[in-house]
Length: 235
Image (cartoon, rainbow, N blue to C red):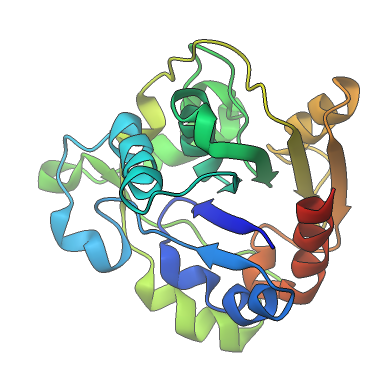
């Protein structure tokens, strides 16, 4: 029924969405999970020049070369930066834009700009000195992640290019297609993504939902996330 295309989060890759493929297929949907340059199985391509525009181009090229149209575009976490840029530059191919616990930037904002100061400082402190100073080591998985999920996912998480967080996005306008926000509510009230969930409510986006999960519902709450994505696809 719907074709979902995912812009995944930092340190992650397409592999992280493995639980979602059979679930969405069972509902009649197609799920495409490209891996951004320098991450996952494309980590051998990592270099210090990779930035937000690189990752936006990654997804735009998937839409173009696979001749995808009318897609439901998902941005998870950092991937919200990417999805916002894709929705702006490839608006003719995107029917709906879905943020899952993600940054939803305005024109001229970087990921660092929309992070709380404490999170920004934490990311800066994590950057290694010397030859690896151009990338940020993986952050920890949410504390409620089951041990079996930590076991298969943690070894696949790799450092993320710093410029992706620092580059400011350039948008021609606010996205025109219907926008939806899925907020992972199993976190403290001062969580860095709550402001975007509240913005979606205040601006009366097409939908604003809260899911009983921590930051990676595609890993820890795939059934509940499938229900929400199916609902959005049919909206």
